[in-house]
Image 1 (cartoon, helix red, strand yellow):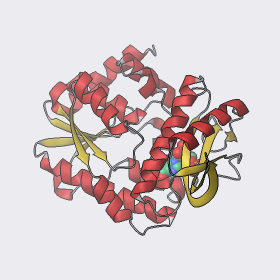
Image 2 (cartoon, rainbow, N blue to C red):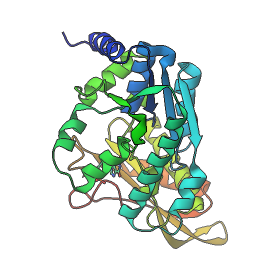
Image 3 (cartoon, rainbow, N blue to C red):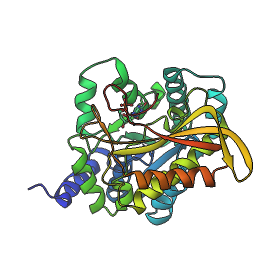
Length: 319
Ligand code: XMP
């Protein structure tokens, strides 16, 4: 019988049998899948679990703190937070090509994760939030974005001599099942029903070079958009929504003064599979309200535009 609690009991028993008394490492990103694995393994293994959370400095507003609050403070999970913003921003300086940015972020991510993981000397297992659609996807094409996504998400570059075994307790589950398990394990609804967020984070939502000042501006604009989507009850109606930073300047007026600052685009889509998507027909009054808040509250942004491109021909992300 498929109930969330049966699946959890079964998964816990299997994990215990697989790893015994050994230590397990998990790369925690704050996304749904790795969060559910963390909650599940914590319940099954208690302090045998060590999570490594690499904060690449390209997360959304307060996101890193929220991950720590949920897992370390509330649930008592051992989480090693690595504040690696400076390293990532350093490596990204001067890099403008989208795929080169993804590769740079992915490579550094694995490097830093490996550094941390190899400090955990007694680790024998590496847990991953692989879910069934990932299994199918990696069985298919070896090129294109799907592969890039996998190579970033599923950390695969651990040193040979570590010889960690893989623990993938969600391998047979679909996303909606993972979510139900997450709720049953006590994760907050907000975390379990979060929109997808790309591994490279805000790095691919700043067009061209990732400049630290742009990250700050984008983070604030994105937070306003998401906050208002929640307030108006639209967050759960759209599949994914976010702001994109456009490094071009546009003129505006503020009181008696003239402003000449940056542009932010808002993107919201409705989709079932993320392979095709329709731009969300959010009400004009709502967009008007969000746009005013962003321009009034963020010094450095003079203009807000709304993306009315479907996928295809567009992609969901701008890079
Ligand atoms: P696109 O832009 O290809 O996005 O229409 C489809 C879905 O994939 C997400 N996405 C990524 N996720 N690493 C990720 O982990 C990436 O490099 C990446 N690029 C796109 C995107 O947010 C959307 O949900």
